[in-house]
Length: 120
Image 1 (cartoon, rainbow, N blue to C red):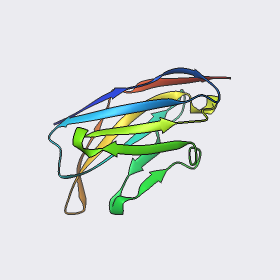
Image 2: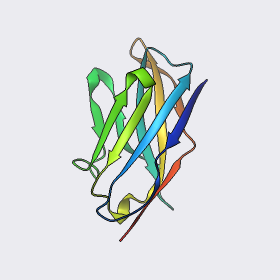
Image 3: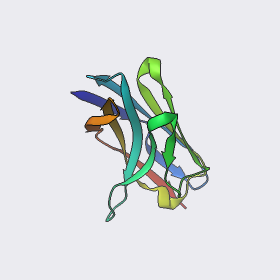
């Protein structure tokens, strides 16, 4: 099992910034991909940013240039720096981790979610 501890959500005015953190612990594979998804009221959960194969990072088009995903491997922690926030970024943000072995995803875990609210 893997545990994901999220922090950093909150309320901010449009144009502001927040940084989300997600610390992973437990049964982590040597190769694992961490990332963030979000779900707004009445909408499906969607990708925000995720590390993937080849050291690449996938970003949703709506956040490119504003959000940055980074990771401290020594702390097993991923960070999502969110700048130039807009009201449309309001959602519950979920940390995601995928354990990978020999190029194949073995399992997947989700955090409990943290609320981000952007007011205009």
